[in-house]
Length: 164
Image (cartoon, rainbow, N blue to C red):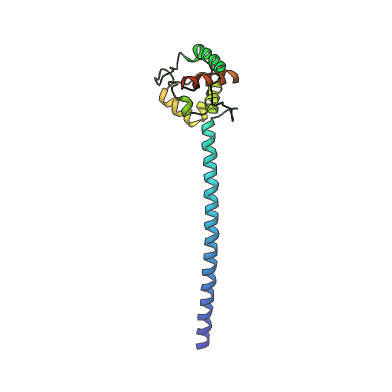
């Protein structure tokens, strides 16, 4: 009987060691998998944040010169006078829509141009645009701006923000 107890005790020790070893090994694997999962989630959040900065639409990259293109800005002012000034001021004053002061410091060229050319989809899907709608309570109408119009208006906004 003593030998059976000895064997049973030895078997239990060996089984405990195997279980402990497996649990530790599995724990490392789970930790690695959890870290990989967190890394993937973080990358997805960074992509989403970058997309939110660009908005929804065709503009994914806009080349902007550090200096103002005066000709574009002048064309943008003409568009502003006809299509934008009824709702937007060049100060931080909210009229119907938000004021334009420092808008190019708050939003990317892509976001502004996507919103100017695609306001309906932006208001339906973009979190920033939806926040502005909650603040202003009026949907921006589609003014039918072309891509060039949007770029010119953006350059005028830069001029308004003090870019030389």
